[in-house]
Length: 128
Image: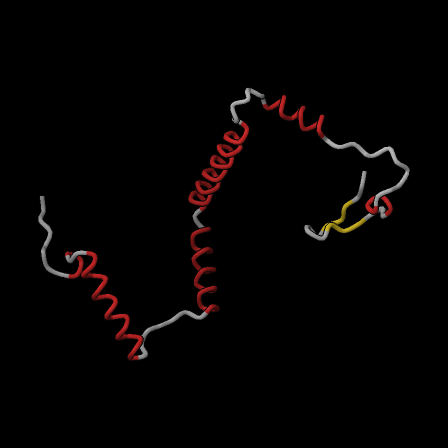
C-alpha cells in the first residue's frame, strides 16, 4: 500500500487549511485582486452550467426518474394512512364529496360571464 506524504497543503488538517485559505482570501481582497461575481456574471455562469449539464441526456433521464419515484413514494405515503381505503374507494369518496350546483335561481359571477380569465394561470376558463 502506498503511503501518503506528510508534506503539503492537502496533508494538513482541515482547520489548518481553512486558516491559511482565510488569510489568502483576506490578502487578495485587501490587495484588490480578488474577484467578486456581479449578479449578471453569476446568472451567466449558472446558465452556462445548466446548459452543460442538460447536454447529458442519460443524466437528465436519471434525474427525472428519481423525481418521479420520489413523487410516487410521497403520494403512496399520503394515501397509506392506515385506514385500509383503496385507491378506487378514495376516488369514489372524492366524487361523492364534489359539491353540486345550488338549486337557487341566482347565477354566480362565473356563470354570468360566458368566459373569464383565470388570473393565476393566465388562461381562459369556460364553464361547461
